[in-house]
Amino acid sequence: MARAPAADSAPAPSGFPWKLPPGFPLPAVPADNPISAEKVELGRRLFYDTRLSVNGAQSCATCHRQRLAFTDGRPRAVGATGALHPRSAMSLANVAYNVVFAWENPDLHRLEDQALVPMLGAHPVEMGLEGSGDDLAARLTAEPLYAAMFRVAFPGEARPVTIGNVARALACFERTLISGNSPYDRLVYGGRMDALSDAAWRGMRLFFSKRLACSECHAGINFSGPITFQGADGSVKPAYHNTGLYDLDGRGSYPPLDRGLMEVTHRRRDMGRFRAPTLRNIVLTAPYMHDGSVATLEDAIDHYAAGGRAGRNSRYKDPLLKGFTLEEIEKADLLAFLESLTDEQFVANPRFADPWAGDSPAPR
Image (cartoon, rainbow, N blue to C red; front, side, top):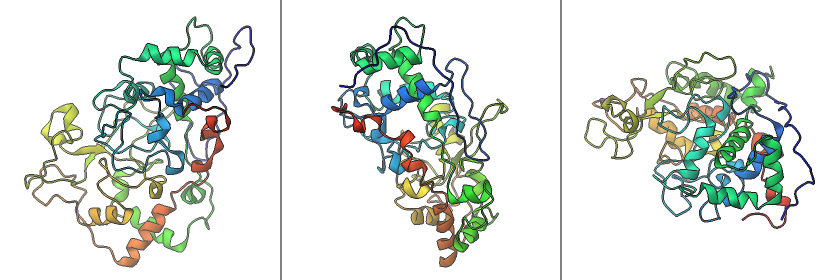
């Protein structure tokens, strides 16, 4: 068990030294959870700690593995009780810039709130801690290292080890998961004209072309549509798209309980609409789509080239999905560009890695 540093009183937490890639704006941070180095390090410990699950065997990192750009490689996530999640685990790369979180919830605007969903949610069960917040606080308080870390991260609180502060620390750590050192970034923000291969250059022109229209949905610095950041216009709205993934009735209907934004708004026009995930590190995050039903990037390109699985009679499919024709060399070029969005430094950065790996015994 790790030992707590001896301290008669907790010092004030420090600020946080953002180390942003060139061209990246400062992430927005809520006033009620200012970021600090101490909160970030506490959040990193918690992110990899299996004590945050009802079975003591799963952590946040179980479904968000660094080497897979903080996804899990599964079509759909599996919870602590073995329950199969209806959604694929989304990448956490650059979540600091997300306007909203999850695949189809337009009301989930804060990482602090999102962190509570997998811990406490029951539909489906993920970490399985519903009704166990006090038990979790007791387990963490019993760890001397945590007792000291919470005290420093949240000074002035008589009982700093709470489920709310767990969520705040996790949110601070997740805001630091910034990916911006891919070959594409070195070209666009670093001016390195040799950063892309000739094939990737050709693929980039295809990606941003009107013929393919990939960038209409996968737009902006995160290749996922609208973003937010410090000083941004607070009126920015998230974007959702129906990619023609299902057609159960010949008119574009999706399976029950898998109808995207419609499940929240109850409006039929929102059938099958989901938020576009980031394309950063996309070669590492297979399988694809909200339910992991597309196995490879090649298959994903074929899906869009065909205009989706839903036919022309779909009432819900995004009008951008008109389909297109690609020569084999063009497809290879497009794949080369998508590969250029991989940030090798991000998936190997020790600042984001498991801090328990060198401890003995680690919580497993």
